[in-house]
Image 1 (cartoon, rainbow, N blue to C red):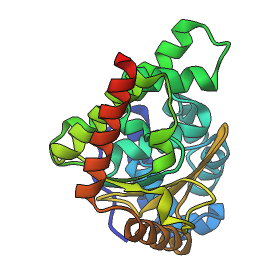
Image 2: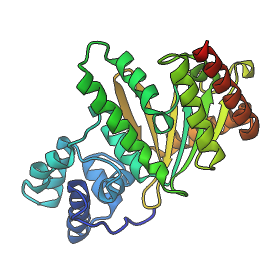
Image 3: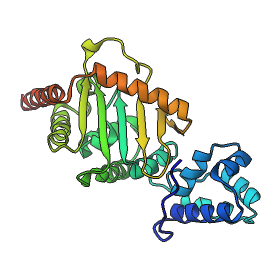
Image 4: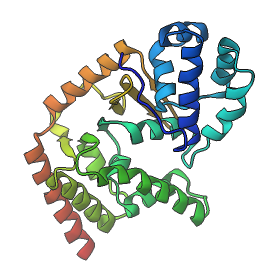
Length: 279
């Protein structure tokens, strides 16, 4: 397993905790696997804590203090590292997403968050929380657009999205919003900032009919798969589970339209939505 990357402790509370965990573990003469066994977690989980890829939860902070003889250092400091602008069930995944070098995602029901426009994101957030005040919705939209800034870098991360045709056909926010959203999606593909494939209706039954998939790879930590449901989500680092979902994703790419034909379909649908909005 790759060794953890040196972190700048001043960069964030989570980076400080990761650096301190690595220091305390090495001082105790323990490998990541040995420390993991004491916490009943994998060695890769410890590596992800040290790399700042995963958040330190209070129950693990307490066990780390006990295993490493650090008093209550991790217990006292994990709360600051856990603060997030994202919903609790997604906060850890958002942190991992920001550090990923490769993101592969299958989206069955909506355009992936990193590829959304503000208007589309606003319609989605409003649908999730129909009675929320406007300022709360705008906070969610702002956070989502900040996540998308990872695509400002011309090369990193590699984002490969397979989007079900159903996500493109579901009119979210109205025809004008959909036209803008699909033009944005096509623009990212044309600028080579994302690989986009559409999984068409006529592909029939496929390997991921039970839900979404998000796979993330890192330069300094093992890969993760993220599972998400209504108001819930979790990260998984079990190698067999990650391999299984990577194979499922590869099956999806084989069933989906190739990138060129996908781009043509997205642009044609954007034009149809624009005509509908004008009418």
